[in-house]
Amino acid sequence: MAVFQSIMSNFGTFLMAIILTVIPYAGFELPVIDNKEDACLMTVELLSDTHVEEKELIRQFMLTSSLTNLKHAKADVSAVVVAGDITNYADEPSLAKYYDILRKYSPVPVITAAGNHDIGHVGDRDVTNITREEAKANFIRYNNEYMGTDNTENYYVTEVNGYKFIVLGDDVIDGGHWDGMDISPEQMAFLDRELASAGGEPVFVICHWPVDGKNGQEIVYPDSGIELSVNDVKSVMEKYENVFYISGHIHGGIKSTAAADFAGFSNVEQENGVTYVSLPTFGIINSFGHPWSGTGIQMEVYENKVIFRPRNFVTNAWFTNAVYTIELA
Image (tube, rainbow, N blue to C red):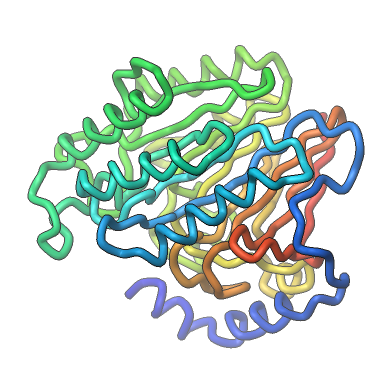
């Protein structure tokens, strides 16, 4: 309802962002998975909001076909990131189906964060009657089994090609929330400690929820971000260089650079040295940009920069009018 009200109250921006995105003014490119420059040190495919359901086959097919496409990549893909809402209703059969798809179809490791639909939405449509604490425990268990780890929380750290990926999660304090997240002092200290240990090298923070006020969060999906007055992750990240914060949740579609200029917000923004990357929803219709599902972003890390190239992972079409380059400090 909040998203619908936001669209209606900003309908001109919503419509123009779609129009300016679907116009391929930068030209078409062949449907292949490829780096556009030499000397790429790491390529990671960024997805969010897969919303897998055990009995819903279309989103399962989209995910399996996208992961299968990576086997034919011309680029040397190192990993995939899924930034939360991997299921729709936090039910264990759907959680099991998601990880089964990863094992069968992904040729590279998949780094997964839990979202509000994976923990907060227990009981939705009477699909499951477990508690949020039990949903959180299920995610930890299945993710550990997939990754071969023994994490005790749904926040953790892993490495790809020597680069650190810090995954944040909902601590479910005092019963938790339907749409929001709790971050304990222990998790804040964990984030600070892991960022410090990166030593200035590019470090990637994965969290389902956006930071309040970034990437159009207050327009696309009001009251849906991390409240900085309660959990000031922004100040923690700004202490360090070359920090990239990657989130989903708001279902904001890919926006061309022209659409971003018109709307006043974009999928990739930088403030005080921190780069904020807002991913479109992979499994459901998007708003304020390209509306169709199946979209995400290819992230390429070079010695002196990071390039973000939005694309459709099902059709392999590239949004050549929405590429962002971030120079490293």
